[in-house]
Length: 313
Image (cartoon, rainbow, N blue to C red):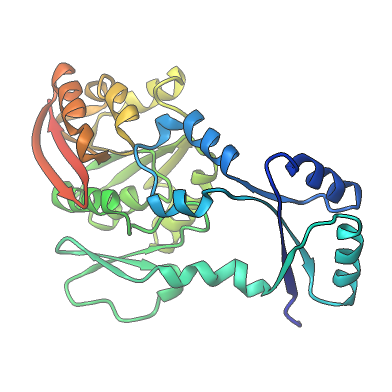
């Protein structure tokens, strides 16, 4: 089957003309538009502030002063005829960059490579499967898709180091904010008996199950739920019926702080709460919340301005 080739069309504009440009393109028949606008980007950051503590400066710089519309047409006679129709009367210059189907489906994979973490873990992107695993390392195969990470972020690495240190054979694990499932699956690969993984994003359910299957882990050992444990009482009751030896939360300080009040109801006697995703400037706030809720910090890990804390009752 011949590979489909595409053109990515970028139309630079201004905030004042953005609605007009979108309306003209839509009226001409192009319904699928990608809008990149600094104002919308900054509003999105502000409205979703509880979900992160830090935004990369590189991303902020890339969006500075940007207002543009992107769309795609096939790189053939039909596509170019569509392009001429869409842009007729637009009175704006545009750029057309050739892409292949392979470009947008797989080019992002070049940024991910196998990663040694701690003394035992070896995180391997699924497309690197089949290559030799270093002696003494336990492979963790992962396909994050385009939504979730593969363990390259410092906060995830810190949490994985804690998972390696605290996973005992046969233990039970709860992974809050599981994303790709990397933390709970790592624990299962290291000998945990069962893991419950939870995320507010429903897409995490399928992604985590798929990644568990890549590692030979079935649903009898790994259960995934979508929901918010801070607001969904039924979900919290379901989780609290079984106490966990290891509770994981690689989220952000603004979620960990209220979550710390619920953790004592989730921990088994002698269990560990491992939280990460904390920028160093907010470590004191998180530690204070843990103490207030009867938890004692037993270990702190730091890397590249990020902090992970271990705490027990």
